[in-house]
Length: 298
Image (cartoon, rainbow, N blue to C red; front, side, top):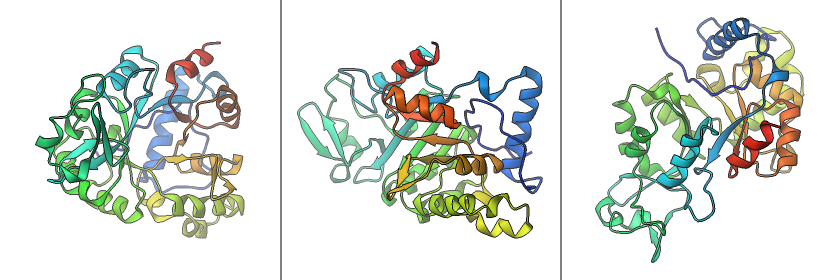
């Protein structure tokens, strides 16, 4: 039986507003959540958004996207997942870094200008050497990871690494380029999850706000972006996109119809977190996992 992405959910998804095909990842995910809800008696009122560590949610003095940052989040048990980005060296090796530059202790190094071996000569301010993509995946087994592939040059080696793994269902894969996401999906299939880009988010928002998605008509399938129809997806969105409010109640309800969790970036203020929790989002990317986790326990 095919496996689908195991996104971290804070609560069971609601019943479908319109029927999905039985094999659609959203239908599978929703069925799994319904079973879990019956077993635990869990409801939305009992749960709060899951916390996803943005670039490792670095503490003071700990570099972002470093082993120390990721380790702290995982060992504390406060984060349900990790968010990170991948760039490529001159020889195509995938490196964990948000920026095109690797911020070494003695100055920035442009990752694309050096080989992996050359990059490994540099150290972060805390003494760590660069963290490669494969080591990152091996170091945090069983943890949900959200990975953004920043440039096309990273794909050949990154896809080779991913094709050899048996834990793709714990990964949510993304890229600013919609074409890059489709290239990844064509190679890896349905086991990982995918995060729609801005154009698909805008189209889906229109389908939700216009009411088409909730019409119950079969033609509403055409209003749903193809990526969401064919693959297990999650939304990773800001509150506003291009000056338009994305996080409406209709958008969140529509996402849940398809079995798609809604994660919000980047949430660092407690007031914003509380507001989003009331709105019903499933998770937030944050630089302050510990602070927001403490808020959840109040």
